[in-house]
Image 1 (cartoon, rainbow, N blue to C red):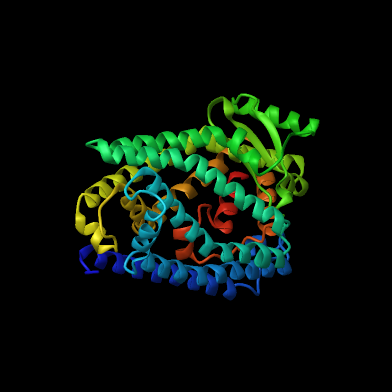
Image 2: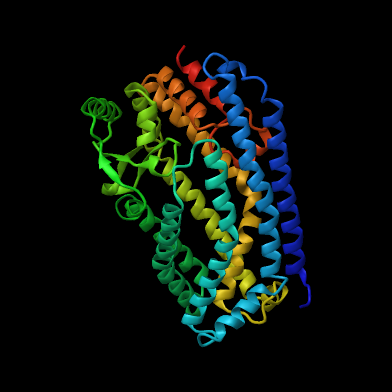
Length: 416
């Protein structure tokens, strides 16, 4: 294989991106370790030193997995492209189906996804059964883990097959296929948002109607104050897999519902649950889901246009280890290169998300009791072993929520 400018771009981008990822992990690990011996002043009266140190150790254990996984993923990308892995997989799947046809394209993409999943599996097992178990969070079993994995594969095939076939058909026939593929992608995402609460999520968890009349009345009163319709209230068996707690809105249109993890309800009192829900309502009141959708749409449009530009050049395929140009090859290369190109944009998306969290907190402070949201967050930081001392640069790239000290400080100003 002859190297060309696409090969050089891949090597440079991969090297810089991998070095940056590892550097950020090391910075974050040092920051957490440096502050392990003392609870930050804003939390000195509410979080014990032992809980703070447990959070530091938990964070460092998770970072250790990421520190090992990052270079493995980089090496795998080189093997797929410059190492000829994609071409070898193409030739092997060509012995099973007619080369260049839809069946062969599906086999090629499916085999690629399975190999990637197989490489990622040990890290997922490590996180679940070593790290999460060590700190008392894991409640999953090997049987449940494998059942979830099987469901994810089946769901990926069910939803991904028609999407891939449609994408290949557009790339083969439509003059401006990148635009039509963009519309298809947006439609697929909207469909997934609509299906998630009532079809997809119940495949993995059990949902039951909230059976707490007093809490239900508080929530209905909050919805009335905020001018929201009365959504269906559900409790999810999150404790089946993890001790972590959460709550979320799901769905769009009439499919929307409010979901509480059973672990969350076990940790918070009713006023705190109300405050957490007010925060979630703030996201909907400010249309954050649609702001994020628009941001994703704009970035994906630009990415697909760039793909169309590169896919028209035979050197794009030759420089990345493939013998011929075809839609399935373009899709696979796109899936591998997008994370490299998109990583420099991570601070922008993280900043957008953090600004949304601040706005939702301000909304909650106006419509519920700010002190109750503070106490709820402190409990969640403590019980979920979330670090209170992240490295600022690492946070800039990775954290979709503001650092605990800044978030609590804003809420405290709302109480005065």
